[in-house]
Length: 55
Image (tube, rainbow, N blue to C red; front, side, top):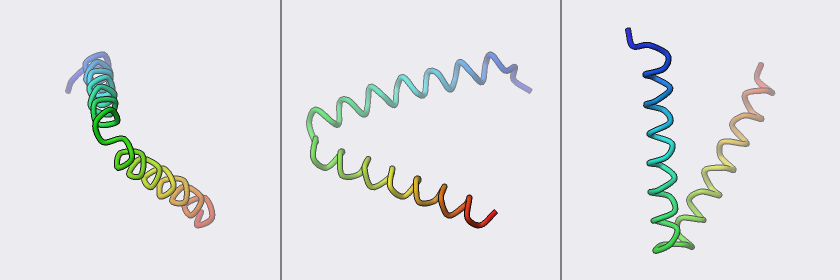
């Protein structure tokens, strides 16, 4: 089983890589990326509200 530091390092690397990809896409495809991100944020927020209401 990998150690917690290994998992944390992998998560940190994935987050930094995700930010780099996000900013790259935002630079070239700004409106499309913003629509996708805002739509995902709304879906996640409403999903959390639904989960809280369910439990």
